[in-house]
Image 1: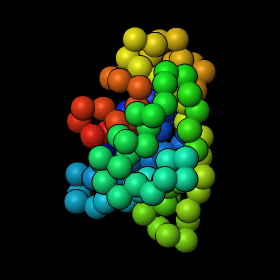
Image 2 (image 1 turned 90 degrees about the vertical axis):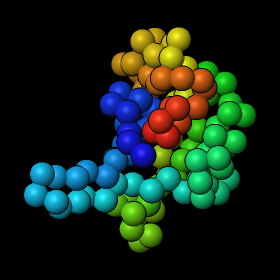
Image 3 (image 1 turned 135 degrees about the vertical axis):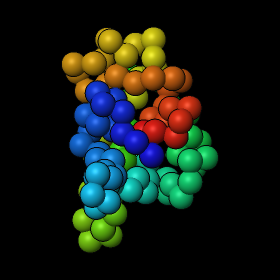
Image 4 (image 1 turned 180 degrees about the horizontal axis):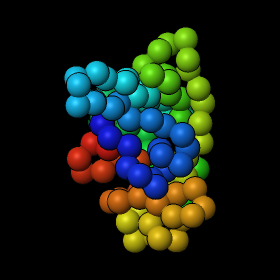
Length: 107
């Protein structure tokens, strides 16, 4: 999944995987938990964050560079598309319903 520029995951410090012109890959961060709830697929992620409302802050656990030895806990503020501009410079900004996942599977 991609990290939306200026979205909650981006502002929390989550990095997406990058593929370069020469075929090299930098693995991004793997999201494994939201508020202590294990995330193994997009449906788990949606279920965990759809319990929240616009402006809520959630705790997320990521494996930096997909490395289990580099687990980090981060905070992200959830926003809806309607309020994207409102949070854009204050730790939020997002497309779609109150969640960290867009219709394309981004967080």
